[in-house]
Image (cartoon, rainbow, N blue to C red; front, side, top):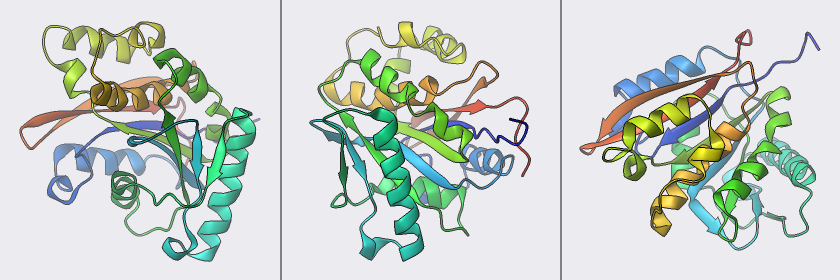
Length: 232
């Protein structure tokens, strides 16, 4: 087990990785984070922008990905499907990766080609069910795969509850986070990818938050830092 490399897990706020924020504090912060651990074998991402009935696992279309990346992403997608072991889960080669997913990977690894697999948000699941689903992805971290959620915490961070939310995130308290006060459909969808990130946490991981301001709004991002960090 000494040779096991446990990758971090990330949650990125919308806007963190677009061109206008590439030189922002959060953009530089993410690049500093990426420099701390080895380049992943693949990236598995849950984005608020892809919502489906049932769970879909993307395989990048061949015309959008070199053959070697297509082969690896298909292998990882099948591995995810096996981990979830859900009758309704299906592989989807027709879904083009969302722009925020591609922007994230390109910002973290601008000079590298990394296979990317995206898992959709099943609209029929409750927040706790999403978290339980995310926990099944935890073994991927031990296989050199980076797990990332992309969403937005602006709505739940707004107002008097923001400080409490930060505390709950910092402690990785999924049960209380899943019982957040009612959010509308879009705000809830933007919140759910955070639960996937926290659900793959190991007891040795610390939870770190940092913020950036984009278009006048704060983007809160999170990363799970393994202890000890894997060697680059």
